[in-house]
Amino acid sequence: MRNDSTAAVKDGALNAAWVEQTSGVKDLELTPNRVGVVFENGLATVKEGDLYAPWVDQVGSVADLELSADRIGVLRTDGTVAVKESNLWSAWVEEISGVKQLELSGSRIGVVLDNGLATVKEGNLYAGWVNQLPGAANLQIAGDRIGVLRTDGSATVKDGGLYGTWVEQIGGVQQLALAAAGAPSTGGQVSLADITAVYGSTYATDTVAAGLPSLNAEMVAGAITTPSRKAALLATLKHESGFRYNAGEAGHSETYRGRGFIQLTNDFNYRAAGAALGYDFLSNPDAAATLDWSAKIARWYWGSRTINAAADNYDMGAVGRAIGYSYALDPAESLNRCADYKKALAYFNGGSLPVADGAITCTR
Image 1: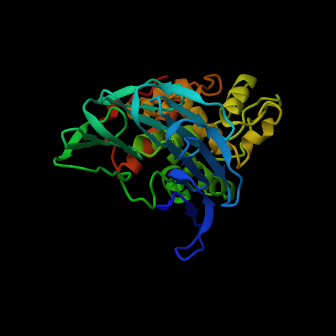
Image 2: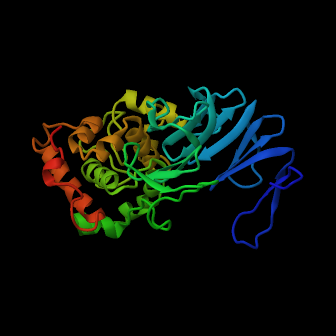
Image 3: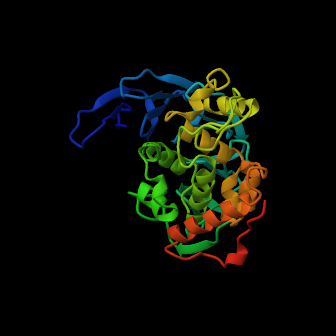
């Protein structure tokens, strides 16, 4: 965004050509496949796809626009916040009022209220707020980290989710910036080598490999990036689908039988997934087991049931309750899933469990 309020964006290499976008701009936001601007008149508009895609107007009277993964958030000039997810035409969900700063990151929404309270929610758009700290001047979220710059110039940061422990950083601060913990090149990603190291060469298939890029992207979008969260998801997917994006429920022919990474089942779940993601899965149920949608559905299902919170508490039993499965197929299902969780948890934690074995809840 230039001083004359024009915006230009380039794709590709650093020496790629600039593509002029629009003028009269007061705020510019980018994600890998979206460009968003707020005009000087307060209208927020977003385009998706290539740099020549058409603009889709969002809402007016906007003070700040935030983009993250498939979410769009606006802080209006009246201090109210609304967020939508999935596509550019999705319905807005009103979040909170009395806001002076908005921050989006993956499945998290964070705000600083006019009274200086920083509060964050995680999961679906209707999740509850978890208050963080008072006296906040600025809030930053990156990966599994949350940072606050206080009005007194001190900075504090926590790892490990909404309930992590704050670690004081430094005083006399004017600006705070965060990057996700760990190497940016890997983030929360899982490789085929990781899966086979934990669960064996049975899963070293072309189908599993083909689904990992989309699964990794949705894991990052859903903040499934800590050892416990990754372990809980992988243990779940091992039993749900064998890590296959195109898995179908064996022995079933019902229209809304289990499909995909996380085995979306029953018409009400197909309907809810469609409403959240902006696609008619009721009319096109087979789409739930495609590369386009399988990982997105898994991330939506995981987030809509706030399963990250269960993983943060090392409660694989609560993960199982949220996922749902039949004991008739395997009376020891909970213990088996938990054993697979422990294997992955130790692997992603550097070879040992981060807590005592007895601190892990296995029963559903």
